[in-house]
Amino acid sequence: MSENSRWFVMYTAPRAEKKVAERLSEKGIEVYLPMVDQIRQWSDRKKKVRVPLFNGYLFVNFTKDRLWEALQVSGAVKFVNFSGEHATVPQTEIDTIRRIIETGVAVEVNTDPIEKGEMVKILGGPLQGFEGECVQKSNQDYFIIRIPGINQNMLINVPRKYLEVLKG
Image 1: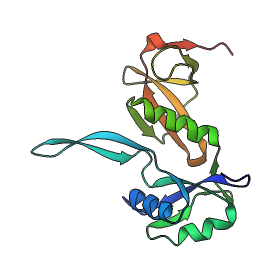
Image 2: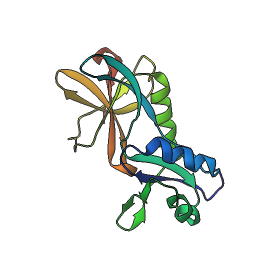
Image 3: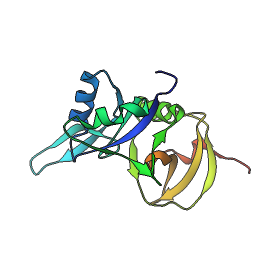
Image 4: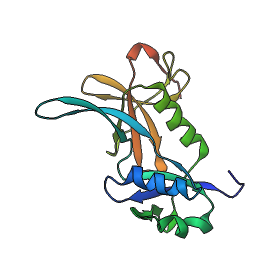
């Protein structure tokens, strides 16, 4: 990763995330497409499938002057912008997403605006040491990792016994 390269957020055509990631990688561009396992129900069977964590998004690590080059790939739509600036995600957030995915914990993605809840620290399990926000969702405790660069939240089910409320 060069000094000037950053993680930009690319929006892809529907269900094209994997193909776009492959095509960018073939061009020597570093891409991160977080994938999770989901159980899909069909009328006759259930099947575990790997799907992108964030539908329609992937992360591309390079310099701003190469954005146009990446958009030439079939299935790439645009780079996410906020107020005229290209959205970027800090390396620390990419590392957080990677660590969560690698643990294999069940993850949901949610774009609803969430009222600030209790700030908590995870005391045990594969995500021990993470600090974030705890919310109640249908009688279960969820831990939120916010990814502001794409206005997404990762909701992770964490047993209450593993959460310690942090004092402000």
